[in-house]
Image (cartoon, rainbow, N blue to C red; front, side):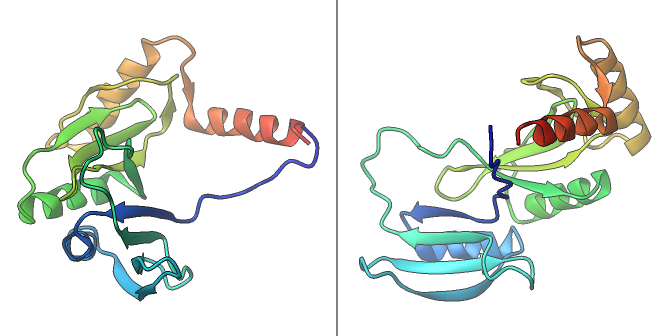
Length: 182
Protein backbone atom coordinates (compact mmCIF):
# COMPACT_ATOMS: atom_id res chain seq x y z
CA UNK A 1 0.00 0.00 0.00
CA UNK A 2 1.42 3.36 -0.96
CA UNK A 3 0.80 6.62 0.86
CA UNK A 4 -0.12 4.73 4.03
CA UNK A 5 -2.27 6.63 6.48
CA UNK A 6 -1.16 6.74 10.09
CA UNK A 7 -4.48 7.68 11.66
CA UNK A 8 -5.18 7.33 15.36
CA UNK A 9 -8.66 6.76 16.74
CA UNK A 10 -9.18 9.72 19.07
CA UNK A 11 -12.87 9.79 19.90
CA UNK A 12 -16.04 7.81 19.77
CA UNK A 13 -19.64 8.97 19.47
CA UNK A 14 -22.87 7.14 20.06
CA UNK A 15 -26.58 7.85 20.18
CA UNK A 16 -28.30 7.46 23.56
CA UNK A 17 -31.90 6.75 24.45
CA UNK A 18 -31.61 8.76 27.69
CA UNK A 19 -28.90 11.38 27.24
CA UNK A 20 -28.94 12.71 30.81
CA UNK A 21 -28.61 9.23 32.33
CA UNK A 22 -25.72 8.37 30.01
CA UNK A 23 -23.90 11.66 30.71
CA UNK A 24 -24.29 11.03 34.45
CA UNK A 25 -22.86 7.52 34.09
CA UNK A 26 -19.86 8.48 31.96
CA UNK A 27 -18.98 11.45 34.18
CA UNK A 28 -19.67 9.87 37.57
CA UNK A 29 -18.49 6.29 36.95
CA UNK A 30 -16.00 6.65 34.10
CA UNK A 31 -14.43 9.96 35.14
CA UNK A 32 -15.13 12.08 32.06
CA UNK A 33 -15.88 15.79 32.27
CA UNK A 34 -18.24 17.62 29.96
CA UNK A 35 -16.11 19.81 27.71
CA UNK A 36 -18.91 21.19 25.54
CA UNK A 37 -22.56 20.66 24.65
CA UNK A 38 -25.10 21.93 22.19
CA UNK A 39 -27.44 20.95 19.40
CA UNK A 40 -26.55 19.60 15.96
CA UNK A 41 -27.91 21.10 12.75
CA UNK A 42 -30.15 18.03 12.59
CA UNK A 43 -31.69 18.86 15.97
CA UNK A 44 -29.94 16.28 18.15
CA UNK A 45 -28.64 17.30 21.55
CA UNK A 46 -24.91 16.54 21.79
CA UNK A 47 -22.54 16.35 24.77
CA UNK A 48 -18.76 16.29 24.34
CA UNK A 49 -16.65 14.69 27.09
CA UNK A 50 -12.95 14.24 27.76
CA UNK A 51 -10.42 12.98 30.28
CA UNK A 52 -7.58 15.03 28.80
CA UNK A 53 -6.91 18.75 28.64
CA UNK A 54 -5.27 18.08 25.26
CA UNK A 55 -8.45 16.68 23.66
CA UNK A 56 -11.63 18.69 23.27
CA UNK A 57 -13.52 15.42 23.24
CA UNK A 58 -12.78 11.72 23.45
CA UNK A 59 -16.35 10.56 23.90
CA UNK A 60 -19.48 12.13 22.42
CA UNK A 61 -23.11 11.35 23.22
CA UNK A 62 -26.05 12.30 21.01
CA UNK A 63 -29.70 11.86 21.85
CA UNK A 64 -32.04 10.06 19.46
CA UNK A 65 -31.13 6.38 19.72
CA UNK A 66 -34.21 4.46 18.55
CA UNK A 67 -35.98 2.30 21.14
CA UNK A 68 -37.04 -0.29 18.57
CA UNK A 69 -33.62 -1.65 17.52
CA UNK A 70 -33.68 -5.45 17.53
CA UNK A 71 -30.04 -5.62 18.67
CA UNK A 72 -27.35 -3.37 20.11
CA UNK A 73 -25.10 -2.21 17.26
CA UNK A 74 -22.27 -1.41 19.72
CA UNK A 75 -19.99 -4.40 20.35
CA UNK A 76 -17.96 -2.73 23.08
CA UNK A 77 -16.42 0.55 24.19
CA UNK A 78 -12.88 -0.06 25.43
CA UNK A 79 -10.75 2.09 27.72
CA UNK A 80 -7.03 1.40 28.10
CA UNK A 81 -5.40 1.96 31.48
CA UNK A 82 -1.69 2.28 32.15
CA UNK A 83 -1.23 -0.46 34.77
CA UNK A 84 -2.70 -3.47 36.50
CA UNK A 85 -2.94 -1.41 39.70
CA UNK A 86 -5.03 1.20 37.87
CA UNK A 87 -7.24 -1.57 36.43
CA UNK A 88 -7.86 -2.93 39.93
CA UNK A 89 -8.63 0.57 41.23
CA UNK A 90 -11.14 1.18 38.43
CA UNK A 91 -12.79 -2.15 39.18
CA UNK A 92 -13.24 -1.08 42.80
CA UNK A 93 -14.66 2.29 41.69
CA UNK A 94 -17.13 0.59 39.35
CA UNK A 95 -18.25 -1.74 42.15
CA UNK A 96 -18.56 1.24 44.54
CA UNK A 97 -20.79 2.91 41.92
CA UNK A 98 -23.21 0.00 42.31
CA UNK A 99 -22.22 -2.07 39.29
CA UNK A 100 -21.71 -5.64 40.44
CA UNK A 101 -22.15 -7.67 37.26
CA UNK A 102 -18.54 -7.76 36.04
CA UNK A 103 -16.76 -10.22 33.77
CA UNK A 104 -13.00 -10.47 34.28
CA UNK A 105 -10.95 -11.84 31.39
CA UNK A 106 -7.32 -12.63 30.72
CA UNK A 107 -6.75 -12.08 27.00
CA UNK A 108 -3.05 -12.95 27.25
CA UNK A 109 -2.10 -9.61 25.73
CA UNK A 110 -4.42 -7.70 28.07
CA UNK A 111 -6.12 -8.01 31.44
CA UNK A 112 -9.69 -6.76 31.33
CA UNK A 113 -13.01 -6.48 33.02
CA UNK A 114 -16.35 -5.82 31.35
CA UNK A 115 -19.67 -4.36 32.47
CA UNK A 116 -22.57 -2.57 30.83
CA UNK A 117 -23.53 1.08 30.88
CA UNK A 118 -27.14 2.13 31.61
CA UNK A 119 -28.21 1.43 28.03
CA UNK A 120 -26.64 -2.01 27.79
CA UNK A 121 -23.47 -1.08 25.89
CA UNK A 122 -20.56 -3.30 26.83
CA UNK A 123 -17.71 -1.35 28.43
CA UNK A 124 -14.21 -2.85 28.64
CA UNK A 125 -11.53 -1.53 30.99
CA UNK A 126 -8.15 -3.06 30.21
CA UNK A 127 -4.39 -2.78 30.50
CA UNK A 128 -1.64 -4.40 28.48
CA UNK A 129 0.35 -7.37 29.70
CA UNK A 130 4.04 -7.96 28.92
CA UNK A 131 3.03 -10.83 26.61
CA UNK A 132 1.46 -11.48 23.23
CA UNK A 133 -0.64 -14.41 22.16
CA UNK A 134 -2.82 -14.61 19.06
CA UNK A 135 -6.42 -13.50 19.53
CA UNK A 136 -9.11 -14.30 20.31
CA UNK A 137 -8.08 -15.51 23.72
CA UNK A 138 -10.25 -15.24 26.80
CA UNK A 139 -9.40 -17.08 29.99
CA UNK A 140 -10.74 -16.47 33.50
CA UNK A 141 -9.04 -13.71 35.48
CA UNK A 142 -9.07 -13.08 39.24
CA UNK A 143 -8.18 -9.45 39.89
CA UNK A 144 -8.18 -10.15 43.64
CA UNK A 145 -4.89 -12.04 43.27
CA UNK A 146 -1.57 -10.25 43.81
CA UNK A 147 -0.13 -8.67 40.65
CA UNK A 148 2.85 -11.03 40.49
CA UNK A 149 0.54 -14.07 40.61
CA UNK A 150 -1.69 -12.65 37.88
CA UNK A 151 1.36 -12.02 35.69
CA UNK A 152 2.76 -15.50 36.41
CA UNK A 153 -0.52 -17.20 35.45
CA UNK A 154 -0.81 -15.14 32.28
CA UNK A 155 2.72 -15.97 31.21
CA UNK A 156 2.14 -19.71 31.76
CA UNK A 157 -1.07 -19.54 29.73
CA UNK A 158 0.52 -17.54 26.91
CA UNK A 159 3.57 -19.79 26.68
CA UNK A 160 1.26 -22.80 26.32
CA UNK A 161 -0.38 -21.33 23.21
CA UNK A 162 1.05 -21.26 19.67
CA UNK A 163 3.04 -18.22 18.51
CA UNK A 164 3.86 -16.85 21.97
CA UNK A 165 6.11 -13.81 22.11
CA UNK A 166 6.82 -10.95 24.46
CA UNK A 167 4.82 -7.79 23.85
CA UNK A 168 7.96 -5.88 22.90
CA UNK A 169 8.75 -8.38 20.12
CA UNK A 170 5.16 -8.24 18.88
CA UNK A 171 5.30 -4.41 18.82
CA UNK A 172 8.48 -4.58 16.75
CA UNK A 173 6.81 -6.97 14.29
CA UNK A 174 3.85 -4.61 13.90
CA UNK A 175 6.21 -1.65 13.45
CA UNK A 176 7.93 -3.55 10.64
CA UNK A 177 4.56 -4.20 8.98
CA UNK A 178 3.64 -0.53 9.28
CA UNK A 179 6.94 0.55 7.74
CA UNK A 180 6.59 -2.00 4.93
CA UNK A 181 3.15 -0.75 3.87
CA UNK A 182 4.46 2.49 2.39
